[in-house]
Image 1 (cartoon, rainbow, N blue to C red):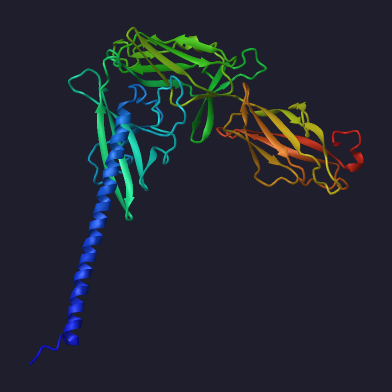
Image 2: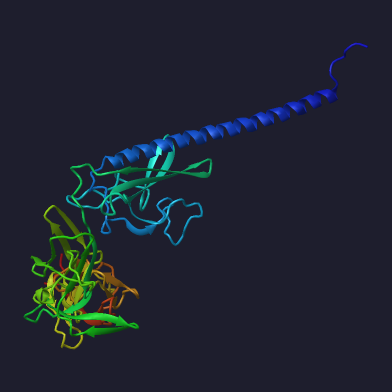
Length: 462
């Protein structure tokens, strides 16, 4: 019998086989493309890490940090994963270490020892974003110390570690590169040392008011016991203790006093740990040296400088020391340039001024109110209560002064005061609230409401 060609069944079977083969080929091609793309992005990630590591190695030794005082310092972190030691990664390969994580600090500051960012811009705290051919690579940079057991000291080399993460077809990819750098001979200080600890007591204290001849002198320390404030009136001086990693020749402390002058004093070598030895690593300030120091209200930063004949190291305490006046108050109110001194013994209102309103009681021209305070800091607030002011309105300090801080409030044109036909004035209460001890003082400002019939010959006329 002759060959009459393929039957329909044979055609369908052939098509089915072809479909299966093509599907398999498509899967292989897709997998191959994904693999090629993954390899390509990983090659670029390696290139990014290599480039940034070279830039790190090119930094000056001091510019690359680090010490406990550096910006971005974290005492205990898994530098492979970036997670705190309290949240260990199951796949972590390294123990917790102290590290400085690079962050975007803006333009470098002369003589600033903090680590600098690799470039302007970044992907968030501790990261920067680098783009390559449409793929964004997020890079976290950490610096850790390496101890060479054969060398003196514990900070012999620096390890730069870059963790690079990116997304490939919806999956997060990651790689980690690291390199070490040793100081060049010209960068290395002989038997380098650093400041191990700086303690200042009291770290919160009262100072005398400005009406005393000893304005700004420390009066007492403030402590909180079970939520209750207790004042130690026996404190009359600042005590400073400093410990260095290696012996030094001299330690000094300096700060800016209330006259904006730099005050400097020397610390004495002492046996702080009471082991019977003085080895040049433990220093303290004699209390008598600080009895005449004067401080401005608010934060004071003490700078500790340890020196030796062959090298110098300097560090600031990590937290500012705060001295505040025993009582906080509003001492002046300024309305549109006119200053009113507050008499604390007077009855309310404590100050009066005028404001121009329309017939419906709305403010005709914006009114600028300034408040000068005593014993307040930039962390404190002034609560405002009065006609037309929303409940919960609080003012933030805009400027620090020797004795307190300045606050400002602008009452915009159109603000609704009571109708002058029903009320001749509006009383606004300002309450100065100090955060650390919740002390409060309220002073009132009475604004006489001038309607259009009273504008003639007043400041209301434009």
